[in-house]
Length: 446
Ligand code: UDX
Image (cartoon, rainbow, N blue to C red; front, side, top):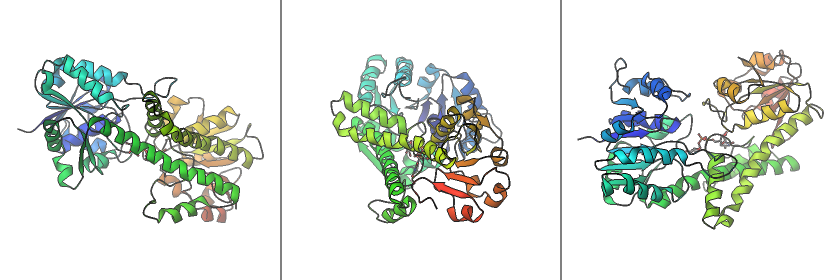
């Protein structure tokens, strides 16, 4: 009989995972403690913007016209425990308030709520990004609480999905990492991922701590790549070099690779910054903080990008931003997402606002979330509205819509044709040809 799957926590990761599991043919029950979320998802809607996810929900959520009915949502732990053979824990692990370490309270609460109802054999699979050592601790706690005893096993299966590509990353992952302690857990995970494995995704088995570390290491490496190229941008700026050309040239070396070498205002979002800090905090607890001191530098290079962009704007405006009208294009931490968590774009807009500039932000998808986080900023419903009369236009999130803008047309709306490109994805020649002063991080001024 086919496995039944529960997904605990239906935020970004969980909602995508639940829908993807239904797409792979499993009966799936998604659990969330928020009734609101359960109601939204049960209607085939998502609380966030993610390309392709609502389509997948509509195809599978029970009760929707023409759906397979394979996917349901609940708030009940006893129902989830009775339903599932495999339980994926997908709750979030945010940065602990005022500290660098990860806040494990949601994971712990999920385990405490589920385990006492595990009366039959089950595999509890952690997907959340956690400090190394958590899986073993959770396994011990489940052994203590679950009536099924050692028939309730724990595995770790980190998730590498990117926002904006969540559905495709889940259905066709680069690799499947399976942290297991025995053959039964491996068998079950292989059964869950039989589809992607058949499509060629490598299945890598390892112990629990290694599986937990893979996620922290992968995110640290990606963050390091971005901060490396941003450090080169700093040097290029001082030396009159062009970091975009430099990145392309080093990226042709296959050992380096071209991806994740886009210099700009740096990384943000709900994962890279907080995972980096949590990893350093955990290394400290393990007594190996020296091994990761370089990550502190990666973090500070990244944060420096934001203040540097503010500095460059001030310089472009003749030394002060007070009372100047600044149009900010982009609020989300990256395009194809409505997520503004730790967004460099919104942070820069906020800093300029606090220095007295009249900031107007436009973003194709992130305005509602941005308004909630930063209600005192000015917002506009379109690029044209945002740039009208602006003394400077800042390009801070590289949405396709911005690449397709007509510089000549926009030039007629602004007060001054002054563009600062924080993402290096606009074509300097086009903008300059239309009479704009174009400045970008890590590139020559003219
Ligand atoms: C990241 C990891 O890619 C993913 O594997 C992990 O599961 C979660 O964290 P995500 O947060 O969705 O995914 O965003 P990602 O596409 O990695 O971008 C992160 C940030 O880095 C964005 O702010 C982006 O603008 C920035 N970035 C990315 C750069 O500044 N330069 C680059 O070259 C690439």
